[in-house]
Structure formats: structure tokens, C-alpha cells
Amino acid sequence: MIENHNVSVPLSPARRQARRLRIAAAALLLLGVFGADLVYWLGTRTVHAPNPLPVAGEDKAETRRMEMIFGKQTIFLDQLGRNLQRPGTQAVILVVVATLAAGGCFYFARLLDHASDHAHGPDNRDAGKR
Image (cartoon, rainbow, N blue to C red; front, side):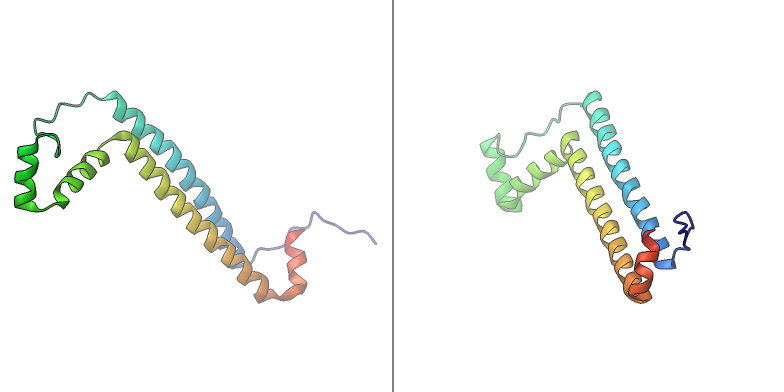
């Protein structure tokens, strides 16, 4: 008896959707890495005008006045805002978000494969792997 392993088995809709999710996840990872690289490269190449406002915490009188008006969280929020404007921070955030989104796509693709395996029973599991 001759077995033909080159025969293509039609994919179920769940497996087709899982394949699309894996492709989307790979595209997200690539776009995230290249996008972060571009954001960092462009951010480090541009000339930033100096900010005329003092950084919270540098001038004690200004810091105290800001605490009295807005509360103690003002210094934290000011430093957070300034850190978010840095190209390195933006690049890291972009990579983290792309990785989380791709991870979600990979997770749901695996769930679809698992559901497809259980829906077709144990006989068809081996047929799809050939």
C-alpha cells in the first residue's frame, strides 16, 4: 500500500482563523520593533527646544507652590509627563504594546486550534498534521 503524504487536507474554518491570527501576530511584532526603532531614531535626531518651565523638584519655591496648589502628586505627574516625551520611553512602550497584542493573537490562535482538535475528534487530529 502506498501512502501519499502530499495530499492537502482542507483546513477547518477554526484552523484557517488561527493561521490568520498567527500571521497578524507576526506582523504586529515586526511593525512594533520597526516602529519603535523609527520612533527612537527620529526622536534622537530632532532638535528639542529647551523647556522654559523648571522641572518640578529643581526649584524649591516653585515645587512648594505647586504642592500647595495641586497636591503632592504634581511632582510625580510632571516627571512622568517628561519621561513619556523621551524617545527611548516611547520606543519601549511601543514594543511592549506590540508584544502584548501579538501574544493575545498567539493565545487565541492556540485556543482555536485546541477547539478545532476537540470538535473533529481524535481521528482527524493526525490527518491535519500530515
